[in-house]
Amino acid sequence: MLQCIALNAASFLLVFSAGTDIRSRKIYNSVSLCIFFLAILVSCERGDLIKEIITVIFIFPFFYMLWILRIFGGGDVKLLLAVVPLVPLCHLISLFLSISIAGVFVALCCIAVSLFGRWSGEAKASLRGVSALRMRSPISVPYGVAIAMGVLVETFKDQGM
Image (cartoon, rainbow, N blue to C red):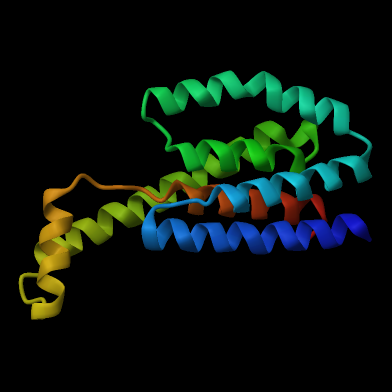
């Protein structure tokens, strides 16, 4: 019962973080921290707490390197580390695969939005500034959306839905 409540709360927070990532390209530290504590509760219910903590400590340097290389943003790295204990260790590769597939989908959507902004020369005056901004800046992918989608797919799959 506690596991179900914690998973639902974490799912809500993941959707919230995806929304803030789309709107402002920010994933709040407080949200990642809350998700991590909920993930710890879920891990305790499964009896995998020590293994999950060791896993997070073990993969932290890899994600830190991705941040240093500017492949992921800091919020994305924190969110990725926070969601690891939400799924059983045997589903960890599947979790990363789901996040990657969702990331491709999100990136393609961002490219389409960027191209649509360039091709729509008939935009209203209020949208011309936004289109001009999109054309000058590189495409930014809200990877928090992909993380949320991948985690939700894996947790629902784990629950048999």
